Length: 81
View 1 (cartoon, rainbow, N blue to C red):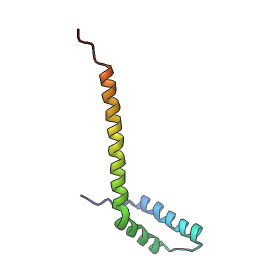
View 2: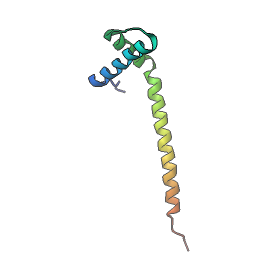
View 3: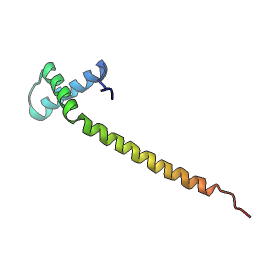
View 4: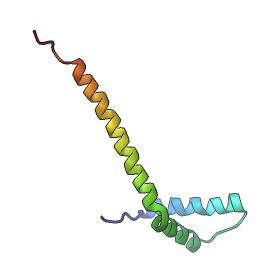
């Protein structure tokens, strides 16, 4: 499967959030390069876990919606005489 890479705008936002987190929570300044490195590291090391959980969550939503549609279809059945 093709690995998705963040576009420039997404990457800019994410790197900014990493830098803000370090400043706010740790009282440390982190440079652009270090923040980009962390983003890449977390993406490659744990990104698949989040991706797979997202797929499982989506599959569950589809399953629930399919069940709801089946129930609706059963209520639409005409009685057979």
